[in-house]
Length: 317
Figure 1: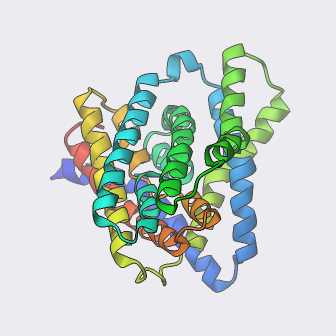
Figure 2 (figure 1 turned 90 degrees about the horizontal axis):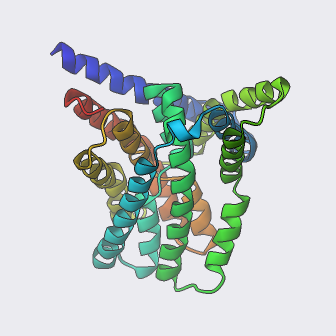
């Protein structure tokens, strides 16, 4: 019994702080201490400056040849592709109308790794979790963007220029720029001025609290009754089926400890907020995308806690 309580305590130490800050974001918006303008500006600040700084500082100070786990990243990419193909088939069988299938598929496989997944890993493993998840985050994010464009174009019957646009988006993505710059500094051993490192650390320290506050303030559960079947399909896949696929395959291949923990925590993170932006820009069902984000953001806190407790009790993470 004491072991179970210890595992349960660990799982809530991973998800509990995130729940508190998300809830605080909701509360502060309702009381007027946060405004929609602040949330919009704060979200842009996190995406364009603070999160890239966090990734840069983490990677640049790490010996990549010792810390990088390309086997883990390779497995994550393969599992993502397998999940994508399976979801495409299931959506064709069960989701109507056809134009909503891409929204559902994207909502089910595309994790919010940059904010909540990263926060899970840091809460669980500290600096080691940040290092282990940073390269995974950068490379799998590229794959997420490519697959999202493919599924939305297929279901919306939109062609022409999509992949060119996503390539430009990847090249200009601040997260990718921060990761690549960190890799260059790490590989070359280039010394950075102390003032640059300290300034970057200040920005890095800003990332997760501000990102989680803005995420919480952005949640809107009032529209969940719309497109309920499609919302539940995508949400259950995101919170249960996809993490189970990643963890079962990873465990079968011999991943244990922090490696299996990263796979679980990244795959069980809720649907990425960027999925709403892409759906809206491509003329898809944006309210459905927003519903999936809202439900998975709340639900993943509980499903992730349960999964961490089970895997810890089995001695796998």
